[in-house]
Image 1 (tube, each protein chain N blue to C red):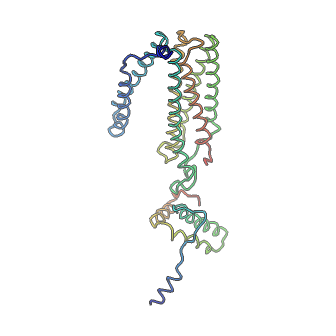
Image 2 (image 1 turned 90 degrees about the vertical axis):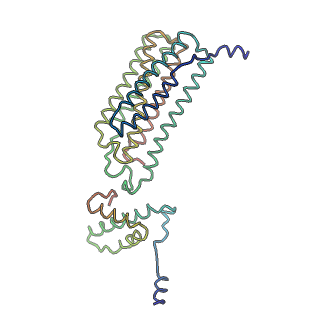
Image 3 (image 1 turned 180 degrees about the vertical axis):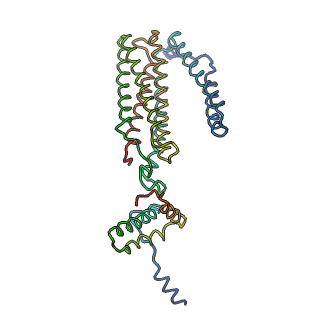
Length: 263
Length: 86
């Protein structure tokens, strides 16, 4: 019985992706530091190219192993699910750090800020304007992605493609709106601890939305090429879980960062 | 000379315990009294009343606050960049 269970698992072939990914991370981080001191983005750009190559190759390899070679048996899928859950949990804690930074500074504001929160001189954004629209856009994308999921499970190919496309478009709409907000905001990242916590938290969130949109775009290409079956579409489920957690993070930001009377 | 010194020492007083600020970090105590002094001055002088009740706050903040902070805040008030609400 144990031997049978073991036969349903598989060992991946050696891959350069862990090394290239790690080197890309090194080049991007050190490149970022270099760009701030010597005003040259070469190292960082090199890291970014290497990152994109790693992302492309490693996901292509996983798709080959799973979809074309049939290695993603139920126990393997289970392992992939655990992996995704653990990763998303780590992302949640990543965001919790930025929330705690915001609350640390806003719940007991120092005299330098005027002893009040939001600090003196900061004109906050009205949460019921673009931020509320952005919340609605992300919530709508949650609806469309659920619809896409059900379409995939029901074997409705055309509807799945439509819902998935709509999900991606909503993601782009969010990104465009947020970019406009950034451009129009009356304060910058340099404006004290308020500016810092605001833009770092919303900035990382925006980056995660872009990652989610990209993940869904890959899923759309795969759905169009008949990779997903009604029972087996883990890549799509992983993308959906990731984006849902992103949405939750925005909802929490909305209630804490954007309100005028921030605690 | 010694008697007057002893008498002086017996009569020394300092800022009393303020239950609003029970912990070791007394920054807020200093800042609050600084604000309250200026708010008291502003409120009483707009009504045309005598501002001597405000002296209490001044004595408290002068006892508690580092001189550098008071100097910095006074400069900020002078050039209009003091962040506190007065």
